[in-house]
Structures are given as structure tokens and as C-alpha cells.
Image 1 (cartoon, rainbow, N blue to C red):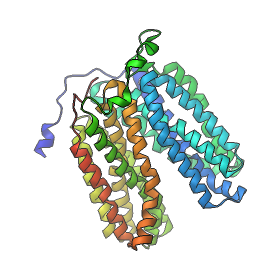
Image 2: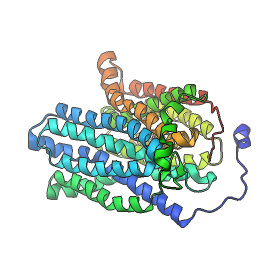
Image 3: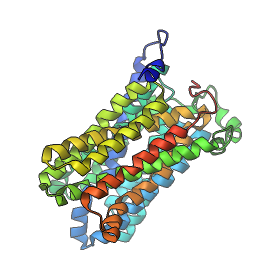
Image 4: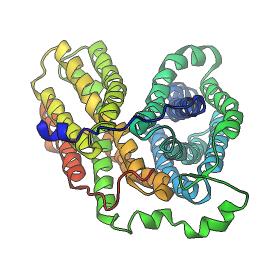
Length: 418
């Protein structure tokens, strides 16, 4: 404990956030709400679409997978382009693509066309988060930046949660197409605000004069920077950290209601437990980001992954509704909360000209966990005949691996280049 206290930064009096900076952070948070809402829109529309088209749940599995693959490639590609050409224009392009892709999804009439449109929409949705993180990471005083990034990124899970409340009445009154209309309409409203208020930046720096983008773009090599200047080993460990945690994240989100119900709990207890997992995640992200602004961030993250492994292990001993709800909430604090905090850490780990690329590629590799995670449960239960309790206990290996990888990360240059 003393070692942790020794890391607390005793900072000199820092400047206050300006009204403009607070507005920009709030705007980025709203952009992330829209991003999260549109990413989840297909899940809310899927039951009625399957019924209307007579499609099977298996065929819609390809629809969901196409969206995840789009998110993965979009995060990698658009983050790289943003670091080279500027975060603002690429963010505007991404939002415009979200509008077009979401509206096009509402016009689909077959599973095949929907698979194509969800992949295309995923490409644009995937670029939003790393670009927003890169923009916010250069705002405000140094001692608040982890919190500011977290506040903005928390908009993503809140957008998904908001969709859950909005989808029911909207879809029941106006059909499944309406959920896509809502998401695209809000994105259209946000576009002028983004154009007006988001500063023009390249590589984390404000553009000072016309032509600076074209003049220096050829000198910026954000992807190469992830593997040069001593960053190569650290980059691989960061990718391992993100991948393992997102496998655990997607596995629990996908299968927690089922495994809790199969363990003998009612469906309502299973649903409440899953909801508390997400609520715990948002709460944990805010708390962990505050700690990261006062204590060495890397240590906070790897210790939090250890805590995640410990709380997931408690599922093995859970035998009552209260126990499942409590363990789910605490697991969410450190699984989801730590992932959001990890994103903030990565944005501050790399040089200014590689921020978005660093976050985008970590998320892109990590989102492979979105493909692997939902498959882990059936494979373990079906092939090896694991019990429910043993399956959840085994899941704790994933955050343990993330903790080890994060512990091994070493910063080759100063972590704060702001």
C-alpha cells in the first residue's frame, strides 16, 4: 500500500477547464452515445426483422459478426487516417458514414443485403471511438485527462442502454425501421455541431495554417510508430491485454443471462445481474479514471485486472440471487470499467502523432474478442462438458492474462507528452 501511496502525484496548481473545453468533452460524449446506440440498433431490430423475413437466428449470427468485423477494421483504418490527415475531418466522415449506413440498413429487404450494410456501417462506427479519444486526450489540464476521456467514452455503453429503453415503444409503434431512423436523425443533428465546435487537429496538435495537413502528412507514420522508438514490445503486450479482456467482456455479456438461469436462478435474476454488470462497468470506469489521474495508471490497470479475476472467481461460490447480482456488479466494475480506463491509458501512452492509431489498433485487435467471446461458452460446455460454475471460474484466466501483460508493459519515453 505504501508503494501505491508513493506514486501519488503532488501536482502544482493547475488551470481550470474552460467552458469551450467542457462543451467539447460533452459533445464528444454525445457522439459516443450515438455511436453506442447505432452499434446496438441491429440487436433491437433483429427479432422483428427475423419474424418479418422468416429468417433464422443462425443467419442473423452472420449479420452480427459482419458488424463486429466492420468495427474492427474501421477502428484500425480510420484511426490511422485520422492521425495522418486530421481527427476532425475523419470524424465528420465517420459520422456521415454512420448516417448513410444506418439509413441503408433500414432499407434492406434480405439477410444478404443487411450483412453488407452492417459491415459498412461497422466500418464507420469503428472509427468514432479512437478519434474521439484522441481529440479529448488533448483537452483540459493534465491531471484531469483520464477522467475526461472516460466521461466521453462512457457515452458508448450508455448509448446501448438508452437504446434498450427507446427501442420497445419505437419499434412497437413504427416498426423495426424506426430504430434506424432515430439513430441516423440524431447523427445528422450532431454533424453541424461537430463541424462548428471540434478543433482541427493533426497528430494531436492544432492546425495553425492552411496547407499544414498536406505539407506534413507524408512525414507522419502513426502505424510505424507503434513498432518503432522502443514501442514494439509494449504494443504487443497492450494488444494482448485488450484482446483477453474483450474476450471475457463479450463472453459475459453474451452468456451471463443463460449461465445464471441454468444455474437455477429465475430469468428476472439473470436479467438484473446482467444489467448490474453494465452499470458496474460505467461506475467503475469513472472511479478508476479518477484514481489513474492521481496514481500511476499502469499499476491501477493491472491491479484492477487482478481484482476482476478475483470477482469472476466468486461466481463459482454464488448460490443465491443476491450473490449473483452482487458478483455481477463487482465484475462489471473491473471488466468493463477497466477496459474503458485502458482506452484512456493507451491514448496517453503513444506519441501525439499516433494517439488515434494506438487506440484504434488496440481496439481492432481486441474486437477479435467480440468474435471469440460468444463462442467460448458453447465450446467449453459442449466439448469438455464443463459445469456452469467451472465455466465461470475458468473465465477468470482471461483477466489474469491481461493483468500479466499489462504488468509487463514498459514505456520507452515519457508517458505524458502533453
